[in-house]
Length: 182
Picture 1 (cartoon, rainbow, N blue to C red):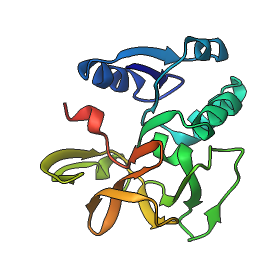
Picture 2 (picture 1 turned 90 degrees about the vertical axis):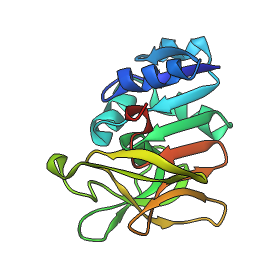
Picture 3 (picture 1 turned 120 degrees about the horizontal axis):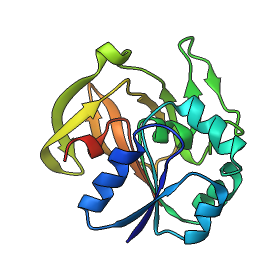
Picture 4 (picture 1 turned 180 degrees about the vertical axis):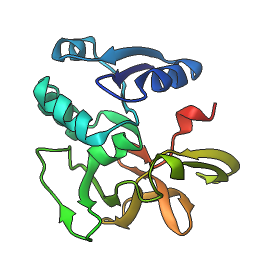
């Protein structure tokens, strides 16, 4: 399997290491020409979703990546990567932002950024993921999935009653960081 890891900001080195440990060939996506290499899966790492979204647009990566996702490219996203995919972002005042120029808008869920607190509110726990018990989960300034907008979205894990990992069509997305638990 060939995995393209978005490497404009965030935990891209950890994401690439995770996929190499799974036996995949990885390469970093930093500029538009990197997309010519082709990939079986796009990995969107944790980091700062606002910065990643801005850089995706500034570097001319946003439109070609969105087209590939819309065409069925498999996506694995954690934390900020999840935020880049969602249809709606809820702010602290319960309003939702649906401006598609900021993110891909392809995953039918609503999220709230930093839902579990800031950096000092980061934590580890153990839970069930996709039917497997005792899976370590690391939450770092994690978003919360506050609403699932399609019955086709499958919830893979939850914490305190909120979904923390979902699968929908070609997308698997986490509010936590599986790449930090290997």
